[in-house]
Image (cartoon, rainbow, N blue to C red; front, side):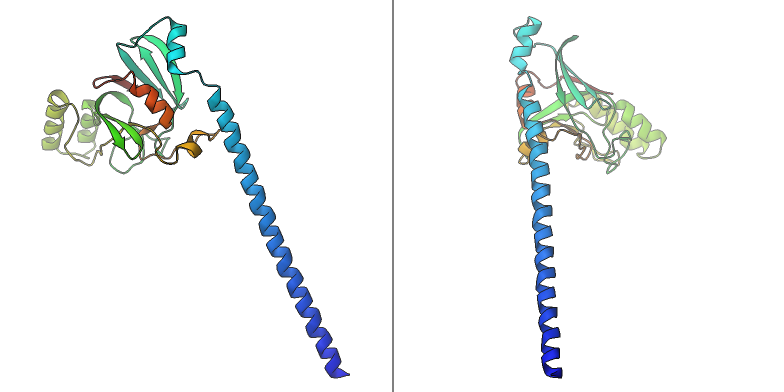
Length: 230
């Protein structure tokens, strides 16, 4: 009899263990399904928003212009927008995201912040890992002066940056102010990131728009296009 009792207890433990394991896996599958369903809904909502955007060519027709000959770009970090103008005439606004350190203004290398000021597109790369890249002439003279005052760069570096600012298209000198800042697309993860219905700042300091939007901008911008970041 004691042996039978021991066997019954063992059988009950095994049944309970199997039942417990089954419940865990069931909950895991339910949770995973819920997460997948949630993100699918988020992406779908983002797709609907994207579909409703009016193409640049249509916006130009609505503004009564056939071409953009004097493009200007104004970027608003607070409204997460990049707007294209024909001189002073507003044409279209795009959703943009910025450096991960959105509350700060870029002052040095590695701070993950987006610079603020007036720049120009100094080079255009159509084979970039982020689809297309419009490089800006950061650091500009104001950035360099601020860096000199704060001791981030020395006088010799400042003099070289000043020379490059006036006589070169892009700034090539590598300093603690950082560099290689620009406007770019998203790259391989475009479908996911462009359809997020919420703001996710993920860059190292550059301004990112969707691959589709950078393609539109590419048709109207050129080297020398003025870019103001607020």
